[in-house]
Amino acid sequence: MIFKKQAEKDFQVKDTTSAQMMAKITECANIYRGAPYWVDPENRIKTINFAKAVCSETARLVTLGIKIQIDGGARGAWLQEQIDKAYFNLRHWVEYGCAYGTVVIKPNGNGLDMFTPCDFIVTEQDDNGDIVGIVFKDSYTANDKHYTRLEYHRFVEMQTETGTVYPYVISNRAYISRSSESLGDPIPLVQTKWADLLDETPPILKGGNERLDSPMYGVFRTPSANNIDLSSPLGMPIFAEAIEEMKDLDIAYSRNAGEIYDSEKIILADDRLMFDSGKNLNSRVEDVKLPHYVKNVFGNSPEEFYQEIIPQLNTATRIDGINALLSQIGYKCGFSNGYFVFNESSGIQTATGVEAEQQRTIQFIKDVRDKLESCMDDTIYALSIYADLYGITPAGDYEITYDFGDITYNREEDRMRWWQYVMQGKVPAWMYFQKFEGMSEEDAKAMVKEAQPKEPKLFGEE
Figure 1 (cartoon, rainbow, N blue to C red):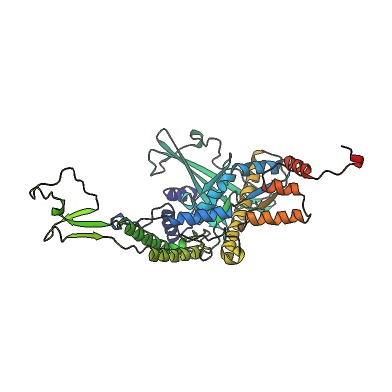
Figure 2: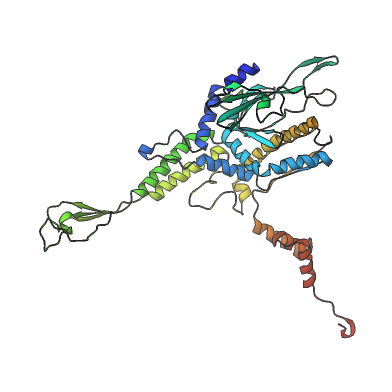
C-alpha cells in the first residue's frame, strides 16, 4: 500500500479502510498464498494451503457451466465480445474474491482489469454501503524503471443553469521510480504507455444530465457480513472465521506426516555381530555394507543384543482428527458438514440425496453467484458507458441473461431420464443421441431414420 499516502495527498482524499480491516485482509492473503504465520520449519510445522483449496473449490462451483448472454443489436454484440474475452478469467476472479473478500473489475480500454484490496483504496461509500469513490493503482516496468498510475473515480456535485447535477469524473496521475518500493516522482502521462488517457475526464452524465446508474466498475464481495469493521464496504475472505482451525489442521497434518516419516523400522545390533569370527575384533568382514536402518551398538555379548524397533502409527486416529477439523473449516466457510474429508467419497458430486445433505453448500454457492451477477451487471454497464464515451458502437438497450450449471447435476441420472422421455414419446430419439453421444443433429437424425423398420411393399415389390 505504498501508494496510499501519495493518493491521499494528490487527490485530497482519505482512505476509509481501517487498519484492523487491512490487517485481516493481509493476514488472509498470506494464508491464501501459502505463507501463514504459523509455519515453523524448526518444529516441522508446514502448510497444506487448504485456504487455497477452499477458495478454488468455491470458484469452481460458482462458475460451473456459467454462460452470460447479452442481447441488444450492435451494442449487445460488442458487449458480448468483451465478456467472451474475459470468460476464462471469471473463475480466477471469483477465487481471488473469495481469498481477499473483495475484488473490483474495471474496463481498461482493451478489456477488463481485476484489482484486489492491495491495489485500491476506498475513499467514499453511499448510504447502501456501495463503493462510489475509489483510487486504483496500476503499474508496469520498462528499462529498469517502474511506472505507476493512480486512477481516481468518484461522483462530484456541480451547479448548472438547470440545477444541481452529479457527474462522474476520473482523474489520472503517473509516477516513475527506479525502485518498486516507492512511487518516485510525478511524470506526464504522455511519457508513459498511458499516453491516450486524460489527466481528468470531462464530467460524465447520462442523457438529460442524469447521474450514472452505477460507477464505472463492478465490485464482487463475498456474502457474509464484515465483523471486523462494520462500516467497511469490503467483504470478508470466506475462510476468515476458520483461521484457527486451519492452523490446527496444518499442525495435525504435519504431525501425522512427521510420524510417517519417522516410522521406518530400526535394527539395533551389537557391533561384534559384524565381525568375522576367524579374524580379530579389529577386522570386519570385507565388502559388508549395512542397510541404513541398522544401527551398531555395544552390548555385553554379541549373542544377546539384537533388537528390531518397529514404530506403531496412529494414522487412523490422526485422520479422524483431521477430518473433524476439515468439517469445521468447511462449515465455517459456508459448506455443508462433511463436504471436505480425507479418504472418503463425499461432497456435492454425490447423486442420491444431494439436495438434502448439501443444502447448506447449495445455498452458499447460490449466494456467491448472486454477488457475481451483481458485479457483472455493473461491469457490463461500465463497458456500455465506455462505448458511449468513445463512440465504439451505436447506443442501444441490451439485456443480460445468466445461466449457471446445476451443482447437483448427475449425468447418468440425466441420461436415464432422457431415455425415458424417448421411450414415452415425449422427445425424438435423435435429441437423445445428440445430447449424450456427442453426435451432430444431422448424423443423429440419419441414424434414427436408418434404424426405422422398412414398411412392407404390396405384391412383394422392392
